[in-house]
Image 1 (cartoon, rainbow, N blue to C red):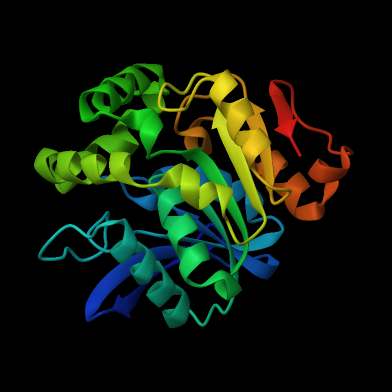
Image 2: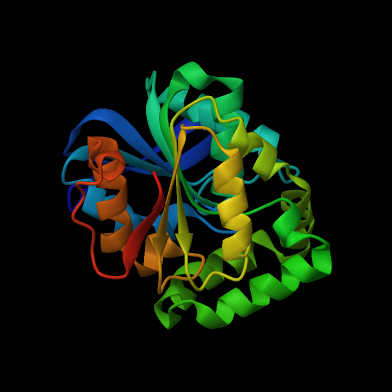
Length: 269
């Protein structure tokens, strides 16, 4: 189905159908957007639509999410990374820029470590998981606070997905997410990486901890902040996020020549 410059299609991954949206315009290395836990790729579309003016964009629903066929069990992060590679294979995409949000960031990091030749660059928007979300009760409290900070416009987009995924599956997967070694994977990312944080995101570490991580990281990492955003930056602040990603892909962010929107600043480049 084709509508508004996007095509909706299905590919087969391990014998199951996977739903995705693909932009018809743009060129160059495709931008592949990776959604968070318990939710489909629908909330990533605002940013993908902005970026589709220049690049080919692909927004899949990972196996078991959204309109993709359900599995017998919930896939963990490593299995989801393998599924994403299979989706790239099915679309004949040899190399992509991966843009993850929340759980999509650990998935993107796992793909980059497993198959670095398949990842041109990696964008981590609100990278969840690891020590900043431990123990589980703390992580759940952060998640509840974020729900209160997100745009009300996200409710009709996200709620049907969460209900379909189920609270038990969501709890189990979120627990896995808190145990994922996000920091270690980030510090040793084998590809150039951009982290974009929301200034009002309760799932992110403190500013002092961010500074510490930046000092530990090598030159492969750039960090930007969208000051008024919470966790779902891709949905709430698509123009700001797209401008940061665009500047970084063009090399202007690292060179300090980027014209960024108000409320967006580079922490480290």
